[in-house]
Each structure stands twice: as C-alpha cells, then as structure tokens.
Image 1 (cartoon, rainbow, N blue to C red):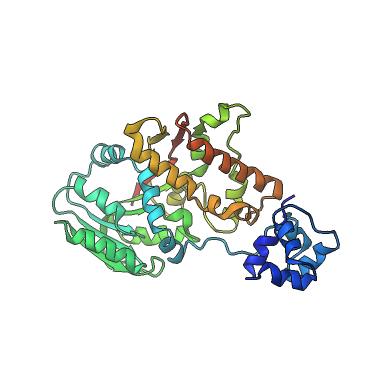
Image 2 (cartoon, rainbow, N blue to C red; image 1 turned 30 degrees about the vertical axis):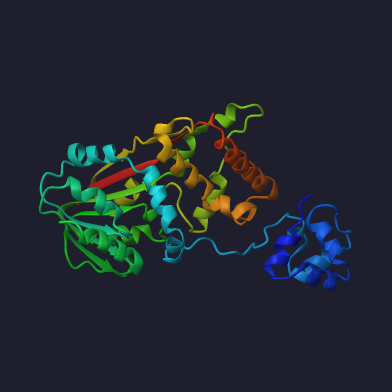
Length: 361
C-alpha cells in the first residue's frame, strides 16, 4: 500500500524529524513509513491526518492530496506562459503543411488579397502559415493579451515583407473597429468558457461575404485513432478510456474535448451559413528505428512525456473525478508506455483529430 506521508510532509516543508517530533516517534520510524519498509500502526493514521489537516483517506491514497486544487485556467495567460515551448512543439506534431496548402488553394481558393484577423494569435503561428500562401497585398492582424507572445510575433513579422499589425487586448473585451475578409482562431474555443460570445465577436469583425475559420480538435476522435504496439506485446496493455476525465474537465469548464466536432453547431446557432468542415489527414507514426523520422519521433516522445496528466501524476486524475484504482490504471499505462517508447522496436500511430470548420455570413 502506498501512503502519502512523504508527499504531504514535503508539501508542508517539514523534515522527517519535524514530523517525528509531532508524533513522538523517531525520525527513523518516519523514514521506514515513507520508504514502505514498515506501515504505521492504525492509531497513527488519524494523528497523521490531523497533523496535515486532511482526511485519513488522503493519507491512505484513497482521495487526492488536493481535492480542491484549481483546474487549469486557460482563460488567463499564466498557463500559456508556463508551457510556451511545449505548445510550440505540440503544434508541430499536429500541423500538416501540405494539407493546409491544399485547403487554402484548392478548397477555399483564396486567389485575391485577404485581410486576416487572428483571435488569440499567440506568437503568430497561423499568420506564419497563411501569409506565404496568399496573394501579394494580403495583411495579417493578431489579437493577443500576452505581451511576450506579441513581441515574439512582432519580431518575426518585422523581418518579413508581409503587412502586419498586433493588438494587445483581451479577446473578450475587444471591440471590432475594422472589417476583415477572413477571421481565424487556432485551438482557442475548446479552452474558452464562453465560445458563443467569441464567435459573435468574430462575426462582427467580418465583411459581408467574409469567412470565419476555426481550427480545433476532438480528443475522442484522436483517442479512437491511436494505437501502439504495446497493446500486442505479452501482457498487452490497451490504452485506457480517458473520456470520463475529459467529461469532468468539460463539466468544470476546464476544456471542451469535443469542440472540433461541435463547431458547426455553434456556427449555426450564431447565424452563419454555408458551413463546411474538413478533418486533417495528418497521421503521425512513431518509430525510433526509422532515422528519417528522427525529428518527428523526438517531438512525439517529448509531447507525450510532458503532458499535464503525466507530470501531475495520480493527483491529476483523482482531482478530475477518477478513483484510486482508475488513477493507478492511467499512471501505470503512462509508465509502461514511456518504457516501451525507449525500445527500438516501438511503434505507435496517432491521428490528429483536428477539424477545420468554416462558414460565411
């Protein structure tokens, strides 16, 4: 049985001696409890719970250490600042250059100069992808609250010949002052508490006949399109069902894991017409033995090992409604997959689940 004594002690900045003095035992006893050499007598469990101000179930690992811990706050800028490099790498894994070029030139047929407005532009990722594909005379404007992201975007575009402008403002408080041919947002609405409000604001930013393009994912589709050879190994381990965790996150307004597929419905509610959608054909194959896949293999492994759920451990899942047994199942899967990925024989297949949803007014 795993007892959460060390974790709680460190959370309260206590030494083993501090805790031993509180319980009137030796610090060697505390060390043995924490290392699993001995288990505390049953009478010590409520005393430990009292010292740390938690229930006995937390000590025993039946409840998370931080049951009231805040969920990730995507509406602010702190999370994005803390994970800026990971987000760049994550986008590289999901983005499909040739498919996007096909959409721009053969599906949407942007054959005249376009004025683009990008909501939540970050460091200008979409602008970097769009501008080389559009006719000369096109312009790119980004709205972003984070000053650091805007500076990075500005520094990049200042070295190009593209017409560009960046507006530092909260996208919720932004009031359109100009009309655009194309309004875009990438991986934005699944993290927003009021997506319809933002869609209406985007609508107000469009010229008559203008197009709105929203790019977002459906994690359920992605999960259905994931397979690793670990499932076929001896004592094979299929990927556990993460949907209950995502449902919890959605019900607590952390993120909407099905946003990509919901977008046509939201656009219809907001009065858009001629709604269309495409699903990215990006399929990533992780295969360490293939040297040509080296950079993508590195990206795949890095993203996987730095996911919030992996870094957060069992508490991540228990804080999102999973019981002890299910949280253990999730973490066991991650640990075994991490080990499997180190093998030259490893192979995994991952679809992106990314939707391109567009409509006009």
